[in-house]
Length: 547
Image (cartoon, rainbow, N blue to C red; front, top):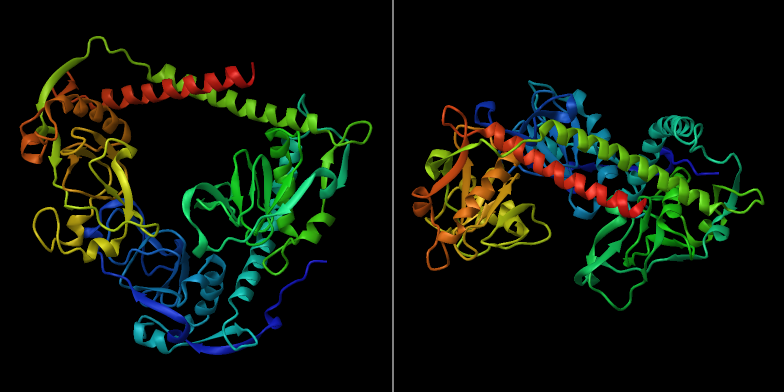
C-alpha cells in the first residue's frame, strides 16, 4: 500500500525570511509605458495568478521560477511563476537562497506558508522588504535542523496527485468509451495482466552522469523529465555512460512514471530505466506508453521505481485467443490512430488551401523607398557578447543560416556592457530590440533577411527593420523578406548595406488600386504557400507510410 505523507511526519522550526530566502524588488512600469505583447506582467492582484497585463517591455525585474509576493494592494497574496515575467514594484520576487532547491513543488509549498501571513498586513501596513526579511515562517526540518526541501516536494506532489486523480480517472473512462470501444477499430475484449519481465526482454537502468561531468555534444541525454520526450540536454561523453536505442524509457525518480519512445540512440541517466523487446516496432511501443504512465499513481519522490519494484510491476495488455500478448493488434491499432490524425490534418489543410488559393496574374507592382515601408534601426555590438546556456535573449549576427541566430545572452550581460557598435553607455532599452521585426545583414553575408518574432539583441552588422504604419505578422514578414533578398546582388563585403545605403534602396511590392502596399495580398499569398508545402509533406507521409 502506498505510503501517505502527512504534515505531522516532520518536526517544524521557525526561520527568518532572510535566513532561507532571497527577496528581490520589482520595478515600476505604468500602463502608459507598457507595450502590449506576450510576456506576463505581475501586479499586486489577488487573482489570475497575479497577472494583470501582457507586455513586450523588458526591464531588470524580468525573472522566472520565483514566487511573486504582494507587499502592497492585495497584500500577502503569493503566486508561483515558472514562466518569464515582469514584476511590478508592488510585488516582491521570492525564492530559496540555493538555486537547486527552487522547483515548482517546493515553491508552491512555500507559497502556502507565506499566504498564512497575509492577515497581519494590509494597505496601511505593507509587507515591505524590511518587514519581509524579519518575518518568521514555520518550515519542516530534517534531523540536522535545516529545511526539508525533499519533504516539501514530496508532499506537494502527493497533493497534486490527489487533486488530479479524479479528473484523470474520468478522462480515462471517457477515452476508453469513446475511442477504444465500438466501431471497426474497437479494442479486443481479451486483456490480461503481465509482469514487466514477461513483456520486455531487456530492463536496465541508465548510468549516473553528473552535470559537472557533461561534455558538450550531440547525443540526447534522457533523464527524469516529463517534457521534451525525456531529453534533458545533449552530451558528447563516450566513456562512463550507458547508451540505448529503439526502446522505451520510464522515469524511476523525479517525474516518476513518465514514459517515452526513443527511435534514436541516446545516453540514459540513472533516473530512467530502459524497457526493450527485440522485434517490436514503434507502434507497439507507443500503444504501451499510456499504460506505463499509470505507474505515476503508485510512486512519488519518496517511493521511487527501483530495479526490484519494476520487475514486480504488471501491465494490462490485449491478448490473442491463445492468451499470448497481441503485439500485432497493438501495432495495427496505433497505425490506425496515426492515420486518422493524418487524414484529419490533410483535410484541414486541403480546405485551407482551397480558401486561400491565389493567382499571381493581374497583380500590379510598384517601387517604394525602404524609408516608405520601414523604420530602419542600427545594431550595437562590435563583437559578440558573452553567450551561454543560461541566456534567454537571442543574439542575431551577420549569418546566412539559423535565422541569423548565433547564441543566447542574458539581460545582465547586456546591462553590464559599456561599449556598443556606436556610442557608449547606451540604455538597456536601446540594446534590446522588440520582437516582430525583420533583421537584414549589412556586412559579412550581406543581404540575408530574417523574421524575429521575439525580443533580441544584435551586432552592428545587422539592420533591424520595423514596419511603418502597418502591423507586421509572420506572413507579411516572409513575403517582404523574399523581396528584400532580391537586392542582395547589389551588395557585398566591399559594398556594405549599412542603414544610410538602405535608406536610398528601392523595394518592389504588390499594390492596391490606390497604389498602396497590398498587405492583405502579401499575407494571403504566404499563407497559401505555407499550406501547399504542408499539404505536400503530409501527402508524402501518407503515400509512403500507408501505401
